[in-house]
Amino acid sequence: MLEIASPLPDELEDLIEKVLGSCVAVHRELGPGLLEGLYSRAAQIELEARGIRFEAEKRVPVRYRDRILCSQRLDLFIDDRVILEIKSVDALHPVHVAQVLSY
Image (cartoon, rainbow, N blue to C red):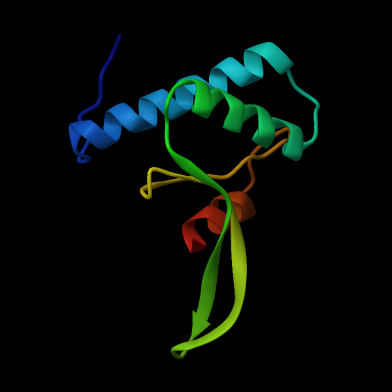
């Protein structure tokens, strides 16, 4: 298997690998076609089972010129370092990427 060097610390890479493994386990069990909320709840159960700390539906402020406009909701904020945005779509579109980058 080809490994690509990462600029991230090994500890963060390990966490991301565990989170991705959790998501793959959920998808293998449930398959495609369900609502995002169901995948989110299943991911929470899987993360809990693996002892991975997270916050569900964490609110973060959206600011403009140092003023809060509103807040956005992160699906899962894992170990205060990783955002997991749950999608149930046929394909990711640029707007999905932009959404996560805006967080």
